[in-house]
Length: 391
Image (cartoon, rainbow, N blue to C red; front, top):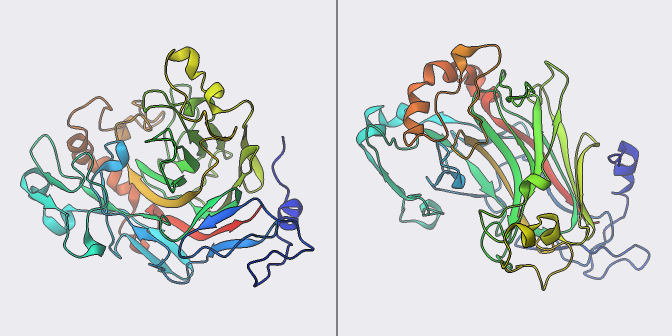
């Protein structure tokens, strides 16, 4: 199926919103719902703009910064924090920028210091204690997270179920950078991850020269979209939904801004970029059957048995923007770049000292971040706007 054309996408937005909580009787009433401090009162007209941030300033009432060392559940190498060296707005663009912890603490701190981010004030408190996320002590083989970055979310300000979401963004340039725009459920209605679902609008890699075992470019020339769902972390049907889109050679997603789009309905989720389809995932007979979990793990209970065919994607989700670095979950496979062996991956995903190996390889990856040029803007995930319309 083809993606939305520019004309069709524009027509989706033509319904005029009204100030009353009652919908205009002349408009089609949307199935979209939303909640949170920044949510507009519903019910909505179909096509009504219900959320928008153009990043003229960094609105802390909308975007909550996470503060954690947990590594996103993938043992990534960054410390997410609330600091203007890592997240800021400038000329209508929101930048999420990586920096080096050692520039502030000295390199010896990574291998011998203790970083405690439990915090006293609410704004400084650790947001995720799992996997030693609030306190770590470095050792020669187990370094404290050497990179600082940011991850922001609308968990308290805006959640929605069904709608059309568009994010205009430019991907970062730099080896082992991992930008993402995604959604998680407001409530764990069906249980812990991934039972209550995850919607990944886009993920990419910042490497200029990085190819999979099949020779396909998996760096800046590729973006991917997927869903995570399953009764347990070891039973996750993400691989039945993942899809990728590559640019022409030399025209990576890092070379300019693009419109990343999600259309989420009670029947399907459709992912597009610049109105070109990446993939459409239909509800079919339900996500339990899509994952084939009954045959893979007989006797496992279906967590969505009381949900709709779209379960777990029939509840409200919130928006996340982040820039991760590295990790050991396999998102950066253990294959070297095809044409430059000197810039091969410095750590193995199976290594117990992956963060150390990554840091020790900085002479190869750090120059690709171009941190001294224009305040490191090229190595930043850049967001022009985030918008959501009712179906």
